[in-house]
Length: 204
Image (cartoon, rainbow, N blue to C red; front, side, top):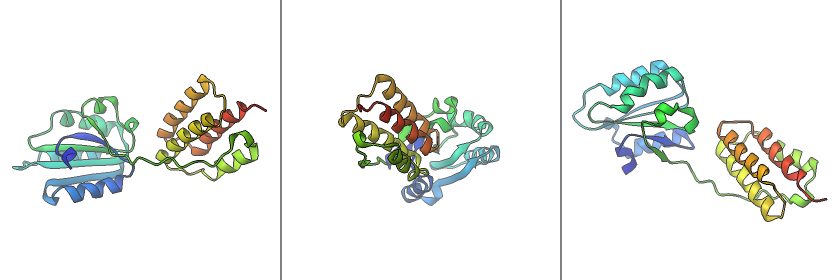
């Protein structure tokens, strides 16, 4: 992939799947991987040490994690901004918010996240009772972040299409719920807030 030829931050839906795509796209001798659940200071030191191993050909160093320690990020700032000769950095993350603004400002973003198709919720909002809301939310207590964000958007679109008279503050709230989902807020809290708001706007 041509995107892998320059340093960047990769937004992904699945760390392991993206790691595999790197392994498929880049020669083993030209790729160094540092993937962790939590990226710590010692991991940053290992990346920096690897970056200063002299190479006659281009080498890609990919580092990815579910969370990045603040001290580890600060340790990487200088080398990400001024990488050694022939070094390409790819910082792999599930969310922009996992990275410090100082990191985000140093590298361009590439969005590799899967585009989730919007499946209909199956809800009839004009006959939506509290019991149905509770059941709907309980069945979706452990949703993945991207799927939750897509569902919030789907519920908003469906409510409007079914003639629910949402107010501007409701739409603003739903936008905030998408951002909360991106920060790994619990799905049942997010969905309950949205559906009770929609329920309150229904004409009886």
